[in-house]
Structure formats: C-alpha cells, structure tokens
Image (tube, rainbow, N blue to C red):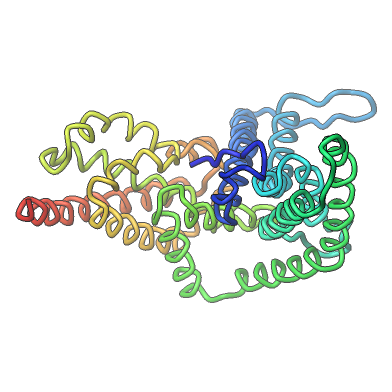
Length: 368
C-alpha cells in the first residue's frame, strides 16, 4: 500500500500524485512511529503489571526502564502527526516541503503554542500536508530559475517561504478552527446517549472492515487513535477488535470448509491466522480478491455489528499493541468483554463467509 515518493515532482509519475495517494503515503510513514511507540508502551505496561513502578529522571539522576519505555513510546505518538503532515507534503512537493509541513503540523497539535484547549488532530496534519505539498509544487514548477540556482533555492528559499506560509495559516486559521472542531467532537462523544454510541461504533467498525488497510480503514483508525490524547479510549477499543476479524475468520473458514477456497488460500491459512492475530488485516486481502462480493459483505456486516458490541461493552484500548494479546498485557480492558466481542465477531464472520462464499461459489461455477 505504501506510495513511493518520486524523486522529482516534474516527472511523469506526478500525474498519479492525488490527495488520496499523498494521504496514504503519509499514513504509511507515520505507522512505524505508532507501532513502535505502542510496543514500547506495551512493554512498559507489562513491567508495571509485574510490580515495577515508573521512576522519572530528576536532578541529574536517570529514570528507570519503565519510565524510559513509557516516555519514548509517548514520544512516538507525539511525533506521529507531524510525520504524517511532513510525508503528505513530501509526496506532493518533494523534500523541500517536509520540514515546513512537519513543524506546522507540530504547531497545530500543541495547544500551548496555539493558545487553544486542544490540538487540531490528524485532520490538521492532513490539511497542512496538502497545503504545503501543493504550494511547494506551485513554487518549484511555476517560478522560472536557472538550473545553477535550483539546488540552492530548494534548500534555502522555498522551505523558508513555505514555512512562513504554513506557520501563518496554521496559527491563525487551521489550528484554531480544527482545534475547536475537535473539542466540539470530543464533547459530543462524551454526552451522546448509549444508543448513538453503538451506532457510531457500527459506523467505525464497518469502515475498519471495509477495505482492509485502505483509505476507509486508515481514516477510521486515525480518528479513534487521535482520541487517545484526550483520554477517550472506547473508540480505539473498536480498532483493537474489528481488524482481527477478517484475517482470522478467513483462515478459520478455510479450515472448516476448504472446498470453498483456492489451493493458494488453503496454503496460506496458518500465516493468515498468525499475522491476523496482531491486528494486521492485510493478510485477508487475497481472500477478498478471490471472492470480493461475499467477503466484503461478511467483513463489513460483522465489523459493524462488532463495533456496536464493543461500544456497548465499554471496551477500551489505551495504545496500539499485540492484537489478541492486548488484554493480557493491559492495553485493552476489561479482559472478559474483549474476548466475548472477539468470539462473537469471529463466529458471525465465519458463518457469513461460509454461507455467502458457498452461494457465490455455486453461482460462479454455473457461470463458468
């Protein structure tokens, strides 16, 4: 899924640089920060559960390992959004756009600098990245310069001009407006009745299950993840359960009725299950490509139902972690409801896959 960033924005591949490909490139660049930070937090949480208390560094004395893991893990989460903005800008405008978009995205998510109650979230980074990328492309493509000056201008002048532009637009427009939007959204999420939270959970769950790591999945995941900084954990709880379902269900269904699956799918059942247990939904993509209609219907239906169930059971997830093992290391809670939601989701998804794929298989055979 990763989008390759072209070396020159004037190349023929520039026609393929759309806002969506830029956003996906940004997400792919930010994921290592999220995953690495989450794993460090998970390890720190395991040590804390074993009785090791975090001791912070002070007065020249270093902190202990639990404090270090939590601090660096949190730093990964903090830098994720600036990296998102910088990578989006780089995809569209090349290397000179990276630093301005990175710094402006950091500004947009630092309330102490903006003078707001909250940050602009990942939406701020997306807008800043797109603005920075297209502005840099305009500067580099429309302002005529001798070849001898291009390297110097790309290094000194264009980044400086873009930084002034993005800093101003972020401080006076993007930051305050989106910070207010995010604050309003957080307030709404806290006060809406339980019935509506279940409906919201169904929407987020359906999006997470729809395209297996694609734009809808990433949008829903980032929405839920951004809420963690405001100590809202239930929406990210959906992202801890629903992405497990598609790959695990495909593998289990492949063992229950192997005749419904291709030889390649049968061969990859074990790897699909093992990788899918870590909340990587991409291993289910080959199963979807073989029989797209039944797999999409099964995955989205189950994702929506499980998302609603997860919200109803008040399942929380405090950081990205290790999938089915999250409750055991304290990243998802409560333990019992987590595995209830996972079991129900797997049962429904496997059942739908077997029924719908069986129907599709018969129709497909008749058409051949």
